[in-house]
Length: 243
Image (cartoon, rainbow, N blue to C red; front, side, top):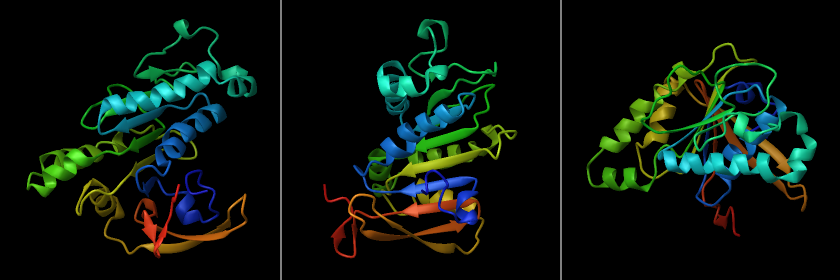
């Protein structure tokens, strides 16, 4: 509900920036980057989505997973035949870019990838999915007193908002997904910069799990331009993702 902007809380659902912090192995990239990119493209094949990661190779891996579904997932292909390219050799379909069948001739590909610190020239995505802008290497360097990698990532995040296509409806947006590694890391920096020093507005999101019916409550909040969903590996003495 948070990822799809369907919480029913306007302050959360219309935030121009989403931030999800969750432990490794909790499915945040599968759901929030790969799965949601596919969903958005099926809904609107004219969309342009930029997928970023600390390392371009990892972002290329995300795109490879996305491309696989359009190439080989027969269920998806049967449901959305109109957006499957008739010939993948006749469209943009490379390691770093992929374009579905569209009703417009916009220059931006449906999906494009980039590494943190990289740049895209002449394109304006509607949505930017920034998945793990920093990882263990940046944290280990920070622990040793070298903040060069972290500061480079911090500066790069300031360049994302100007890239967006301002004409996208209802509005262009950015999502940052990651695992917290260190105090004053890039995730904290993003919240400080785009939170504009405002006090957080906190909300309690309640829902029932579909299989067990177990009721779950999760605090989410909005600060400045950012809506934040945060979960730890262990909460109240319980493993959040025991599997």
